Image (cartoon, rainbow, N blue to C red; front, side):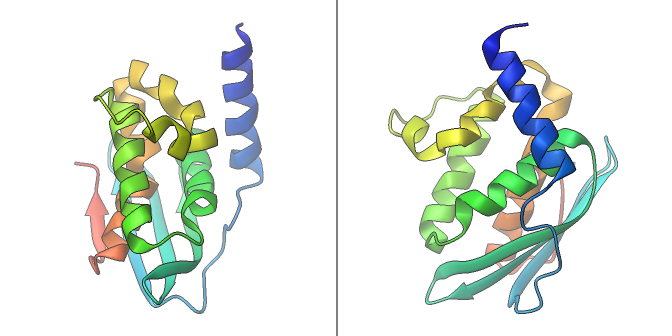
Amino acid sequence: MSELSELYQQVILDHNKKPRNFRKLETANHSAEGYNPLCGDQLTVYLNLEDDAVKEVSFEGSGCAISKAAASMMTQAVKGKTKRDAEALFSDFHRMVTGEDYENNASERLGNLKIFEGVREFPVRVKCATLSWHTMHAALNNQELVSTE
């Protein structure tokens, strides 16, 4: 197994077993529910937006290891970001896992989220990796429900 594959497995397993920000956010002023009918993943993303910035973010739900790990890492990545920066990160992440071209500086912005780059090789898993991101995007835009279908 390559070092990158091993690192990918370690990170996914760590965030799946001990997801960060896994709770209902009582101070949330935005939230959305997301569902992936292919895999059965379902989650709710909670946001506390203040002055157009993500002050707090959390999620609850159940799903496969990729879905839960992606949600955990998404919460870490968008916390403290402006709404605009969170949306840009969503776009960068989505382009990366779907194999679309993305800006040269996107790689730097994605940071440790680049661990999900290999997901593009497994099209069925792309929806697992992007569910939390689509749900966060929906919450930012006052949409209550999103599906990967």
